Image (cartoon, rainbow, N blue to C red; front, side):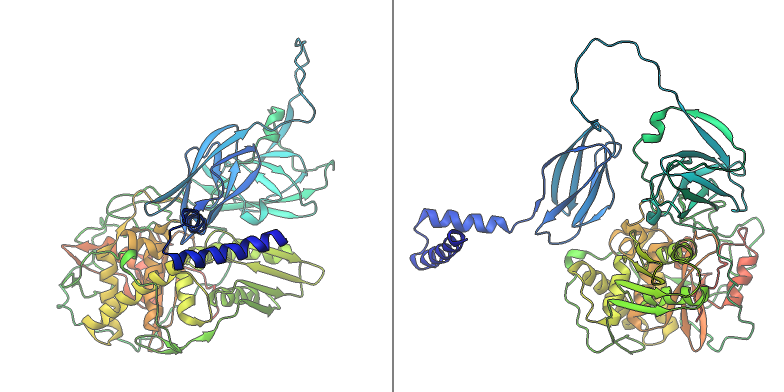
Length: 620
């Protein structure tokens, strides 16, 4: 310890001497150079050898921002988190792969060597002698009913094969919180790892993007298991011990059984009158012209994923007309230029208020929130409130049922709704405390929602990337006000058309849950995105303007759009579908500022009657 302290003192004295002498001492120059290099960015390991089935962490030391991580061979080494300053790597099977971290022109690489899982004891080379073949394990095959009523039992260490005869299956999966208890392959092989006494939900996503599920009770290892008579299938012993297949974070879940939001039957008190050119006389869309479906299909037909589920992918034509004739708006002074992050400032000037059109007082940020609930309605309301406040964690104290009951409600009825709405990114974790009747949930947030939290709440800490994204939204909002004045309708129409002019619907549809095309960064920086990106960009601007708003997810969990409150009436804005309806360089905007009655009326005539139907998970 004394030697280290002496070295530090000598280093300081030498540095002072260097500055006074003009740098004539070569040794001092070398010392200063080494200290400067120590603060530069570098990857934590350039080479790594690991056993199959293990995980390890890589990070960029002294990172100045988030990096994008990828693997040259995900079948050997898989990246669990695609973006960040650090990442978890899963060693899948023997082989070599290169993990690359990229941020702009900066790249770092780590060569990963995955070795076979080693058994205990040393290997002795000897003349092989014939041995009896291992007796294959009989893995029972169970059918799952389409009404989600199937409940099965499985002992720790055992496997079962699930089949879903009602539909052609796209994949079987479980939520992240349940992966510690079971492994589930995409083709339905379920292996219990731990968690005796727990019940987990196995989700089934069909080829037509509908979702089903069944329950699996985990029993103690060696327990006698009784299930409905299954069809046996013979599998080699190795199937049970294979490395678990890691699947993407689930999107759509089982449809909640909540009462739909009541429609508004009275005439709205807010009648928007745009200053754009007069409305063209158009007739009702012919029956041969389909409405866009739940995938918000772009002009170029994308490949559907679970979050943008289509029933078909029609292209709207120039003959389409909305149920209530909206005013078209040409591009006019709009342009399709995207924002350059390098040119955006990382400084945001925020005082005690926010809201360019409707000022609001910024509240003090609270990292942790606590709630006490009596029923399911109160539980959902508490979760929504915590997510709206951007809490790093929140604890809910309950009376009836147990932690698993409330966690299943969160996963099945709210988790994916909030993930799709832009509140959160991949990575929910929870602590279940049955003894004290408490559940603590720790969400993670997407960049757009972090920017909104930073705007709304004083004391919330964030990085430069988030501040730049917020500045992009502020710039667009100010641009709209400069062009259209303080009329909220005209400003929102300008913003809607500006987003449409700068964005193209992503094709193919991205599968990564945390990619830019599923956040506002897709619109502002990349110029392409899916419905989550359009909606997140509009929501940021609605908050910058200070207008009360939220997002709506349809019953299928396959589409999302915005809702804004003006003069006491909620109006719906679906920027994605408005973008699909570009005509002759302008926009018809069939889904701009519709009341609930108007939206549901249009929805009933759509080829997909669930396209804009939703469940009331808001409880306002």
